[in-house]
Amino acid sequence: MPISLATQIPGPRTREALERGRFDMQAGYRALIIDDEASHGCYLVDLDGNTILDMFSSFALGALGYNHPRLLAAARSEAVVRALANPTSTPFLTTHSWLDFVDRVAERWAPPGMHKMYCVDAGGEAVESAIKAAYIVHGERKRAGAGKPRDPLELAPAEQQAILENRAGSKAVVVSFGGAFHGRGLGPMSATHSKPIHKADLPCFEWPVVPFPASRFPLEDNLEANAASEAASLEALAAVLAKHSGNVAAVLVEVVQCEGGDRYASPDFFRTVQKMTRAAGAALILDEVQTGVGVTGSLWAHEQLALDEPPDMVVFGKKMQLGGFFAGERYDISQFGRMYQTRNGDRARAAIALATLEAIEEERLLTAVRTQGEYFVEQLRELAARHPTLVSQPRGVGFLLAFDMPTPELRNTFLVRAREKGVMASYTGTRSVRLRPHLITTRKEIDEALAVFGAVLDELV
Image (tube, rainbow, N blue to C red; front, side, top):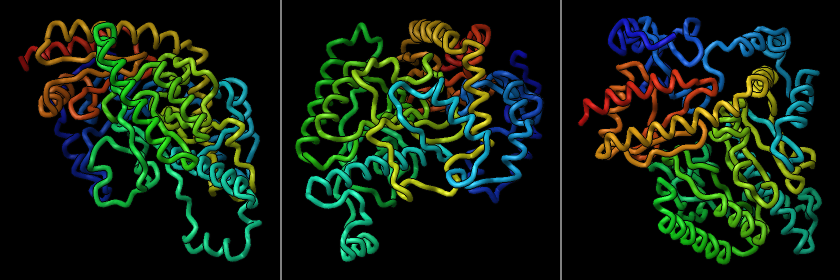
């Protein structure tokens, strides 16, 4: 199913359809209207019959391409039909299908060292929940250290009333990193520092921010500069932890800063961050909303960091088709009512998540992503060598790939022209092209994308 263009993009039927749905506040973002019955594998088909190679996967939401037979079978199953027809408040009422999902994840796919899983609907909500868990544990420990009951329901009536009247909130902080993106809820947004538009006019917690190293590529040519930037970041983190000593609930960090521009740091950096966080008595929360579920060639990207011990919490979303976090034993919030939402676990989404994880395993997609990802990034380096004034910093692990262009305007022009030639890619950071192939992408499709990228760059010279 190669690229096939019947009209300009967008074509007349697509342009007409783009005028519909204006009641949707998000309509202004829309680039294409797709035929989700005709779309297949790594190719989407628009309303004009154009077949477009998808190197976007809806901001890494997609894992197995379009109309994967295993996902279609799961979606048509009686378990999903009943889940949609009979919604439950899963913590109180559930079915065997939810228990099967939880048990299978615990047995096969949870990151090593994780003790419990907490599920919500999406990644940003999952980050919010992990922050909440970190604050709960921090508050319970602090009360115990002050000789007060851990359980807030055992506090004196006046103290409980102060909580209800917002007069006794935690003064603890969450430490995050410059360039981070953790979601659009008010808690995650307070730890988000990628674009001003995300936060303008909105209230945020005054939490400390530490510079992120943002490795320069190729790594072998930038050893000294990258070591210096990591040392500066760690020095800044040490200063923040000292300033807020005893009052840090969590250090929150992405394994790769995706929305911030596909920015990396070394495994040594993350191992040191973990040691410093543990010494500060805080939770280390790894945000794997975009890096999780196979896109880096391991099921969880932090597996490649060789941490000295498991992180305290690992947040997931996107490719899991639901959100949540895995927690180490110290962050198992067990008190009744402490961590609860009406739908802590969508059974229909869980069925699709389970089918996705099974397909990744049975089709050996992690190996394929590692192999094809190495080839892709090497070809991006060759593209940069041919167009050194246009392409710089080619980088990636697995199918988490990016390169930079000289200006935001030139980057945006590149993306529009690539789409007009039949390849859908996306933006990240200020001037980076973000590539997020589906996990099933083959070398043939990679070469097809590269040919289009090369043609567009030739036009831009």
